[in-house]
Amino acid sequence: MVRDTAADPQKAAAAVDELARLGVAALAGEYHSVVARAAAARADARGLPFLCSSAVLDALTEQPTDWVARLAPAQSHGWQIFADFLLGAGHSRIAIAAQPSVYWASGTRVLRDHLAPRGGTVVELDISSLTPAAVCDELVEHGATALLLLVGHPEPAVSIVKAVRRDERLAEVMMGAPAGQPEFAEWATLLGDDGAAIPFLRYLPERLGPLGARVETALRERLAEAPSFVAFEGYDTIAVLAEVLRSHGVDRARTAEAWPRVAVEGTRGQIQFSRTPGISVWQWAWTPVQVVDRDPADPARFRVLHAG
Image (cartoon, rainbow, N blue to C red):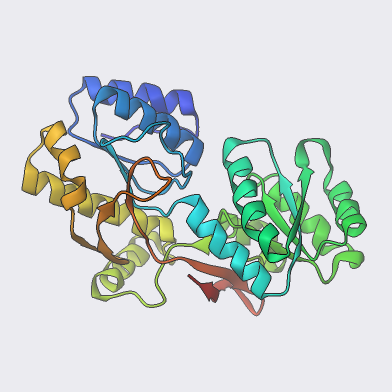
């Protein structure tokens, strides 16, 4: 059974309630971190196993829970790797264009805490009160060499990218989007060449194994384009749940008890869950992490710039 949360925490909580009443054995999914947090809290309260595929907020639940497991790496892990990439590329004066959100605020904190002890400085630009042109002025004033887009897609991200690309004062400024907006096909459609050379995080290994290669081929045929890393997260989620239900039955409590005993070959490596410091759910530690961008010579092609 499928329910669309529409990136709305209240709809997610209502969906969990409905599916719990309908007697489902487990829940899977959610791409949006703030919405996943609402779903995880409700699943925990209802005693319903939830395997979160894509959301990365460290605090997926307020208190430790045995009901929730997660495949995606915690934000603190992935975004620290992105911060290391920035420093390695020579960027220590970082500007962050951010919208008000628990997710963006958490990401900003991870970046600031990791960069500051290593000589990096971070200035925050509140996009709710700045036009794209004003963002450009702020970048010049602060002497930033990199701008990170912690904003929604397509807007205001697309408008900010276009403004920066057209400002001759900012020709040497690198833009980045750690949350992965440039992964979307719509990004390339809306921005064309302007959308290239904007690094972001994705969760794939340098080289897929036999299972990953088979799944990539099948997905490419079905989608008529290369699958994103989110598609592999989805496949791995179903593979893990199928194995747990096969081995332990459909009783909810037995499923939750099985998280620490999972050992499943996924598309991106062996999947096992453990308790990780600072993480309140059963966590795969860790999926492979890459920093990639769209190649300026061919925006349909992704270049791997850094791995962690």
